[in-house]
Amino acid sequence: MNSKIVAIVGGGLAGLSAAVEAHDQAYNHYIDATILLLEKENNIGGNSMKATSGINGVEPKYNDTMGAFYKDTIQSGGGQADLVTKLVQDSPSALNWLEQAGVDLSVVSQCGGHSYPRTHRCGPGPNGAPIPIGFKLVDTLKKRAQNLGIDIRTNARVTSITYNQLPPLFTLTINNNDSERISVDALILTSGGFGGQIHATDLDNKTTLLKEYAPQWVDRATTNGPWANGDGVRLGLSLGATTVDMDQVQIHPTGFVDPNNPTAMSKFLAPEALRAYGGILLYQGRRFVNELTTRDLLTQAILQVTSGQSSPSIWLLLSDQAGHDFGESSLAFYEKKGLIKKVNNNEDDLAQAMQLDDSSILKQTLEQYDSQQNGKLDSFGKSRFPTKLVSSPYYWLAQITPCVHYTMGGLKINTDAQILDKENNLPIPGLFGAGEVTGGVHGSNRLAGNSLLECVVYGRTAGINAIKSLN
Ligand SMILES: Cc1cc2nc3c(=O)[nH]c(=O)nc-3n(C[C@H](O)[C@H](O)[C@H](O)COP(=O)(O)OP(=O)(O)OC[C@H]3O[C@@H](n4cnc5c(N)ncnc54)[C@H](O)[C@@H]3O)c2cc1C
Ligand SMILES: *[C@@H]1O[C@H](CO)[C@@H](O)[C@H](O)[C@H]1NC(C)=O
Ligand SMILES: *[C@@H]1O[C@H](CO)[C@@H](O)[C@H](O)[C@H]1NC(C)=O
Ligand SMILES: *[C@@H]1O[C@H](CO)[C@@H](O)[C@H](O)[C@H]1NC(C)=O
Image 1 (cartoon, rainbow, N blue to C red):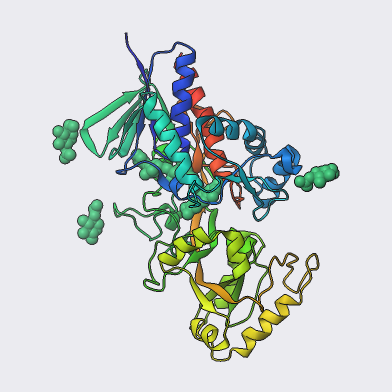
Image 2 (tube, rainbow, N blue to C red):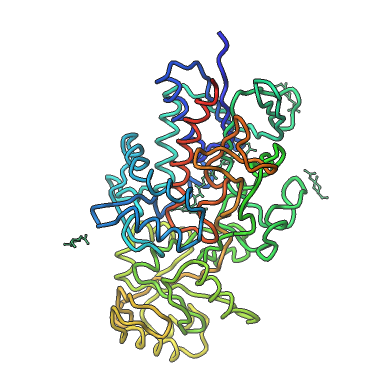
């Protein structure tokens, strides 16, 4: 008996979803297939491990509808209609699948650009400590994959792929080692984006995809791990695939600046929820933007106000109430890392912490903010003012800066997760893709929570269709 082999390149959420679903599809249809998950790092998880905001799914409990979710996604980025339709329509079953696997998705919040609460994450653990959603998703599916006997190999970087005219269709080379070649019958690329290599050249001394497609962001700090290096896009291109939206890179407006290492190129994300619960942004004691506008506009405003200034420090300030609503155990984590601190509500302390010569400007700003009414637009276009500031006994204060965060572009796929070729825009037989390595779903701006969803929806589809392609 000759078992067919399906290889999956990249062990993040998309790869794990594909692996588990491929296994189940083969098992349920009595197909003899070996599922092989290849991961170049020492541990699987990729950027999926870093996610904290949540995963989207239509939530009828809050009156959300497929139509509203579709409209929000298209309005935010102008992604491809058929891909977005599938993303939205498959969201309830994707969340259900994760819950069946044992992931608690009971906390739902409304993030920027969403017209209903639909971003799901885990409730706190038994001791009140936060359970980060990305870690929980990866950990749950990894255990599931191991239990199912899926072959997970780490420290295995796929460095080149050749296409054979006859099955097995692909031959992979691992770690540039000609003695480590694997021939496989179907291939799923789930290797993530290219936002982790932010300089002009990468570790192999090759020009980075960032330099090639969005050079204006080169040498800016990133929230990604260095593993997000664009390998998958290059491998796809070598097989004749076509790409879409490669120049569309999401800059997250708020990465934490670590005062102990302000020039570090890798930064922790200051999650959007800090602003959703009432955090404001200050430059030299003044507000300058609606803190709840979309990521692209907020980034633009920050870059504009700091442009050409000798001291480009932007401060994120939260009242004690906002901190409480966001979650004190999460704040304690950032505080321990030195990324956020408590400052007494006292003019001298605040002026010193924010390096202000004149603290009267800050005083005016806070008083002005407290005089705004919920539901009425202020001069920056903000109409939600969740907490008062002047009366807070202390503040949470952090310095932030815009960071490279997500690469919207990638390999072009269809709704069956087949990767399309450059020549005719037709599926390349046996080749599938899912997650951040692909493009088209998010257009020019990704909504919070849509990426994890994309990984599960298209990862599952890729797994099923890879097995179907073996016939
Ligand atoms: C800090 C942060 C917070 C985020 N928060 C959210 C959120 O709350 N909600 C949301 O929806 N999205 C969020 N995102 C985006 C989201 O996490 C990612 O887009 C998504 O997880 C990508 O998943 P993936 O499976 O496509 O890739 P990844 O999870 O990055 O996994 C890809 C894996 O492939 C491996 N790999 C790459 N090349 C090769 C190769 N040649 N051979 C073998 N292995 C290879 C990599 O090492 C990596 O482990 C966040 C991103 C970051 C950085
Ligand atoms: C949903 O809509 C119904 C009917 O309009 C309304 O009564 C209810 O309060 C809404 N629920 C939420 C959570 O907004
Ligand atoms: C290449 O792979 C072979 C077989 O796995 C191994 O014995 C050898 O040490 C590898 N070479 C290098 C340079 O890693
Ligand atoms: C990249 O270039 C540097 C400096 O020229 C060199 O030291 C290093 O060995 C090169 N790395 C690779 C992988 O070629």
